[in-house]
Amino acid sequence: MRHAVIALTVLALIGCTKAPPTAMVNGETLIGKYVEDGKIAAFLGVPFAEPPVGALRWRAPQPLRSKLDRRGVTEFAPACMQTMRILDWYRYMAELFGDSADYYDDLDVSEDCLYLNLWTATLDKDAGLPVMVWIHGGSNRSGWSYEPNYHGHDLAQRGVVVVSIAYRQGLFGFSSHAEMSPAEPVANFGYWDIIASLQWIQQNIAEFGGDPNRVTLFGESAGAQNILALMFAKPANGLFHRAIAESVAGYGMVRMSTLRQEQQRIAELANIVGDASTTLAELRMLPADMLLKHYEEAFADYYHSPAVDGQLFSQRVWDSIQADDFPNVQLIIGTNDHEFYDDLPDDTTWEDVSERSKTLWHLDGDQAMAIVEGEPDPQRALDRLITASRYVCKSQHVAARMTAAGNDAWMYHFTRVREDEAGAEVGAFHGAEYAYVFGVHDDYMTTTETDLALEETMQRYWVQFATTGDPNSPDTPTWPRFAAPDYPVQELGDTVFAKAAPEPELCALFEAWHAENYARDAAVPTPK
Image (cartoon, rainbow, N blue to C red; front, side, top):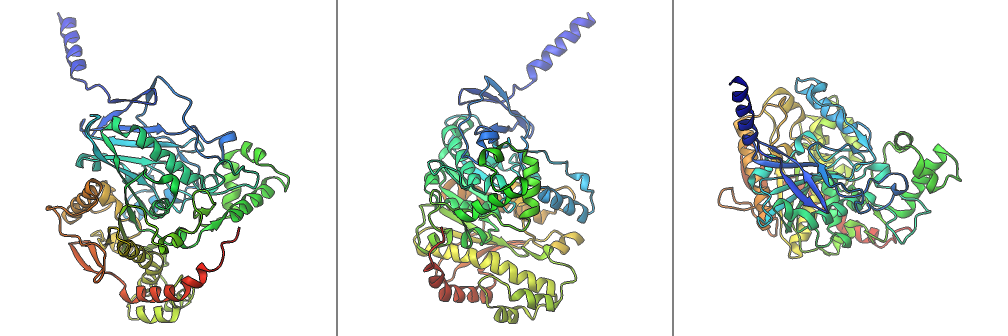
């Protein structure tokens, strides 16, 4: 009798167990898992291209051929090859806020990294939910698709399908070689990876309840830069319809490398690991970790912008912006209040501010210095200068050009500071906003009702924008377009309201410099 009771109990438990979510994609049955008490189906580590290894290193992503009848996709795949720069930053933040660096696990990296992650509340093919695709940042040399604050289980509960994608970084994603055939892509492989993931989404997202005609890209820092660049890349046309650019810097829009410069770096690397006769085929067969080590030593300070390659980009992104050659894409763009504060030494002096002001991009140093000299804290004064020149003024310029050209654009200014000692030390730092967008806050940070209210508002804005192309709804404070004559910006902070654009004096300096110098710069042919 006892065995019969046990057997009945086991059968009852089996009957109550929810079968894992499945989806048919490209002839494979993907088997995911349920999270959030069964409310969200998660498909993690889904391949969207062949592993870019061996002969596929430094080639455009190839269609997936290595298929399985049934593929388990319940764990994240390794991150793309990179140093531990971003992981070290996360561990630094954990220690700063009073936790241990061990809060974050070690990061597995591999060249075999072209995978995406997906969270959805329904597998109804007719659901037609808007799709939000996250492009991570990290200067295009580090970062990964499933960093702790990028998990989409919370955001997906608001009626969107959330996807985060990987793309090759640094040496493997942003370089070229003179032997490459122009019949194929010869540079910008990280961008081609993003395009391949978007093509996968177009073909398959309906299986996960998504609408391929309502795809919004959202990303931060270099990820936001990449989104703006892809707005002007013809192979990406029609693959996305809206864009949210968080804390975008001007590097990859104003300063873009040439194909020759991309090739020269790999030629130098070839000399380091071999000699001038080292061929592309030989480089493709060398161990990835060895190549990465030597490359990072040789080019530690190089910023990986997109290249003017004649394939994806025929001119600088900034030139396309000045030409008002915008696609039919709506845009949210914004910056944080203290983008660079935590990167500056605590003992920053006014002499440091003065010296650094002379090296600012597109700002007159003496005039800029005069604008911030009333700050009581030289560290904050220097942060204001760098934040304005690298982020705020260029973002405002992009949004103003878009609305003047007849497109819709909205701007935000994120000012929320965590209510503890460490929060005051870092301010509204670079990357502070995406915990609110995803609704995934680190346990070691103080999260109050004010933070949760801001999270609620930001998620409503982001999701409404992905749904309709306009962030406004009856449930949120009105967010006006960034347009003449007032150019209002939405403050996202302790309270949420429309205000005048930040740093008007510094951005007036930027616009004056731009009006005087851009035409001269644009007249200089791009070197081949």
